[in-house]
Image (cartoon, rainbow, N blue to C red; front, side, top):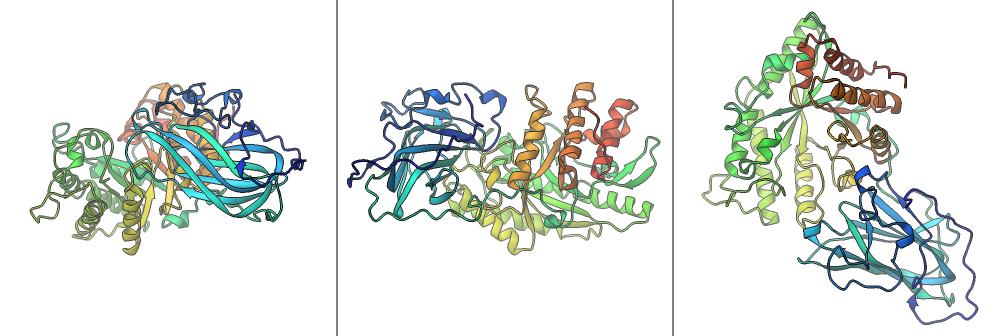
Length: 539
């Protein structure tokens, strides 16, 4: 099984000796020429079940699903790797007029449809023309075969066809068809695309100026449910000081450090029913803006560091937008009343979800501006989900509303998807100003170090910045895995772009305060990395 080989092109297909004017499926019984993946496939999905071996592809043999089930042998399986391009060479040069791809949808098995589907045509296999582009949207519930089909603007003379689709979930394909005739009369010549037609490709990391000049953002977790922590486990001034400033082993302040903080809730809050009701939203905002803690604490810590160092600096602040329809954890029977009109919010509709989103943004801004915080600058908001749920028919509509509203107020919208999450490669078209991709290496003990470099390649390819992840543990294994992030950043260049840091909820603080010299290297090396002075270790 290979998902990374190049297509073996060998020029145009021959002309048909007895060309037919009747429209037929030009791919009937035609073997695929090759398949490419947008990204390396994670280790756990490199199996014959998740990704069918190429010699077992049955995309054009005419077999159809007898039942709408992921075990049905009529389907070819694709999982992870961001997307695929599957190419065919036609037996004869033909006039292509349309296409059809049929996908299995089985929600209970996690088998979904792609969010985007493209069809490319070529005469020589090297120069391609985008002939059709489709957004795939489920409009009905229930398991089924979902067709993506259409006709081209005209009949195009072609020898090759390439189907390109993304993979946010398991994508099982029943069949590909290309319709047309072998009679070339009246068929238009292909005009190859002169520029990159894939809107995802950027081939650069984001510049600091794209996010108000911020360089290093620490993820500041707070707001546990009250039964987990009576005060919600807030950030205090004393805890924020070693993030805003760099302190040496003797506790002396030597330099500035992180210049940004993203406030977001602990996972035991987001998995609780409290996250999914009006009472919980208000609890989270109360905790975020409680006097002396969290946002206030960051302001005071920044003031302390600036005055002691004699510098002028403001910490950039990002606030989380709680999601209106998370698909995990415990759910209460009703959401509750946000705006005090006596009516429970209805989050089953687009308008209800937009209303709740606007209320949340407005309430967060009201509370932020209720007092002066001269050492802070509110830069924007964070979309608090780690993938785009394209299978939710309202997701993009609500996201677009949030993006437009945040932008209308003059703020940025940021996002942090997990490794190869659905939609991570389309962050720009979904309205985010900056997105930062997680490699999920520190927590995935089966992931190999190459994951870090694959993630750096994908981040640059699709224009994202990079999240560094530290478990917070003081054991040598966790420290080594985190240090490998730093080595990778220095070698690949993401050290010189915007960086966000997950540190297990006060991991860098513990590394600053420790007397263990190995654990202390986490704090010191992170400082050097943040200042773009870290030197990667020799292999």
